Length: 285
Ligand code: PAF
Image (cartoon, rainbow, N blue to C red; front, side, top):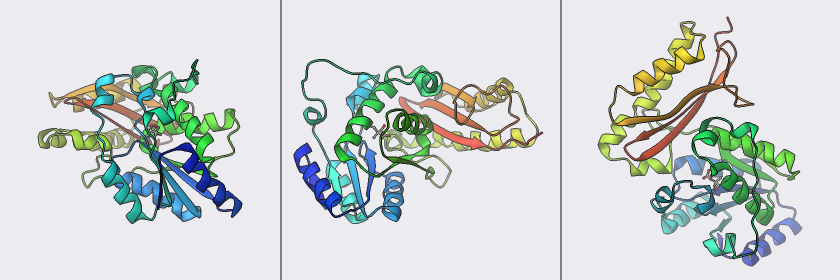
């Protein structure tokens, strides 16, 4: 496995592979890898002949400096996991490599897809994601790139960014891997105390309740999200950032629950912010 820390090292290997007509799959990450990331790697390996993983905690996408400071890092463990998983190249740049001190700045934004969910409650977050992902896309120039559907809004924004900016890259969304109680796998789960981890299991139980409400014919998004909110607030240590039922492509608030919709939530368990998303099938009344 190659480990590239500079753009020159990265591009030398990529160029060799392109000359040999390899198809390059890319999995961008912020490290602290878990099974969910390994699933993205496997998805790439299934359809590409070379897989590149980047590990970079991107300061531009944190709207809370404390959240950035506390983001878990384990480069040594991550490299071992990549090696064992058969990754071909890891790009592990320092901050100065991705953000050299150049004059000027550039911002990418997508107003419509950012109106709701994390776009509303984490201003600047998706601008930071689009900036780093487009920089990485230019540097790695993959054929395909793989993103987890747990971050559904991120996936939709990247999907549209690639079309709007003509990146010749196919974007693949990979279904969320879950713990045995249904909690979505996330690097942030490592920050939960055992008591908080117990509280977090209310999230998958809330999704099960949502499914039952739909099966029982609930059609009003506001009543629906209020019931779900009350369920979560049965634990004093959960704070709701948002619970929204939105259209799965436009991410605009659903007018009713008569067609399939995305149920998206972000909550704080203690100081840890967790998100989850699931597309719920309507009862087609
Ligand atoms: O999903 C993530 O881990 C990050 O947002 C990404 C795509 C690696 C960009 O920093």
